[in-house]
Image (cartoon, rainbow, N blue to C red; front, side):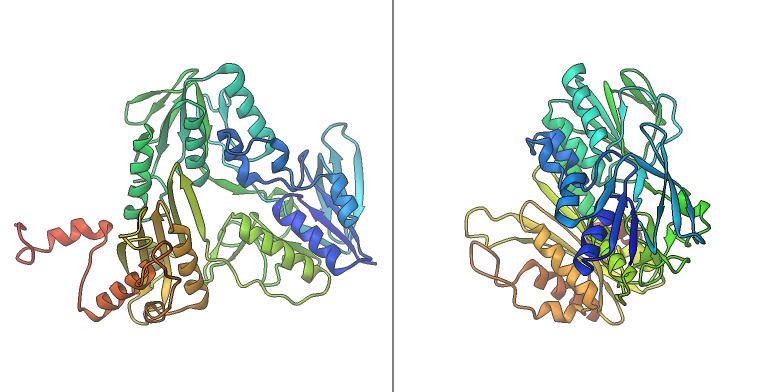
Length: 472
């Protein structure tokens, strides 16, 4: 009888357990989770704090009891795995509540330990009014602080996805919020055109935006920046990135990859043939350029969990990699990215270019039309779509999914130019924003009509003497 042992009980782990049971009614399936909860919606945590989700229970998708009842999976929470004995096909655990030790055997092991927020070595970072957001317990602590301490000001350190979602949440809770980002702009993985749209939205809602600077010290009611400024902060949210949970894998002698994640092959098998892995702790292949990358996102983690379970039970399912499609809503604005940015494509040695178009999301004469921005990155030689970004108040997610599909299918821009997208006056336009972006890319490739990105503007102006009005 197969004994499938899964370490980690959230996205990849819970999905792996459910998939394993669907594939094998007879296997003994056990899931070990270091924390108190399994299968919770960690992507929804900021929205509970914001008040958009009114019930904590809605974030708990399964309990150990319901998982046992529905899938006949034995679940152990608050159970920390301390050692993997590969030769004996067993693991040693300790209960974090009472210190009780226990041994579990396996025929196949699936690691799905995810990651943890990076904690900076910063004076004051361990204070009671400083938080990160990753678990339900983290969420409860923040919510309790907001209710009992009634802070008036907050600083969010890090302008990425979780950071900006928490900016919105804290503004909705009535706080004056500042966001501090070390890079040139918030959402540093996006191009200036897209990040600028988000920055404008933040400022429209009274958020202080501080870029190209860092926090040097956290005080009881303020933070100090490296540019000499001080910001009021009755509470601080740290959101500067996620580090994979790898110590157990390292101690077990499993191979770590070049991108700093647990190395797996296309079957999600580690350097030990009987140990598979999935989720935020692994590094996988980027579908566009083939490079090894870490992409800590819920969608890839869930798909990897399914595939790891299938292969652990004798399957031969290859994981094709990820293109890193991500989208964020900040107040009323939506922005997203997929595939490679222009900078990433060029860094990978691809002769890449990009275009940006701004187009109404449905016909301008029908009430409610909003501009949607599409940035399309493509190979100058072949026209193949390498990635892209979108932004807007309506329709940005729809166009982002088109670009993601084009990336995965390696479509050239000429194919997108000829696609019939859904159209009626309240829904779209006869020439969709994606058609227009493809037209612009074709024109740029042929030399018929050039265009300039925001990131290229300074260099263009320096070299444009005699080619533009007013240039000197």
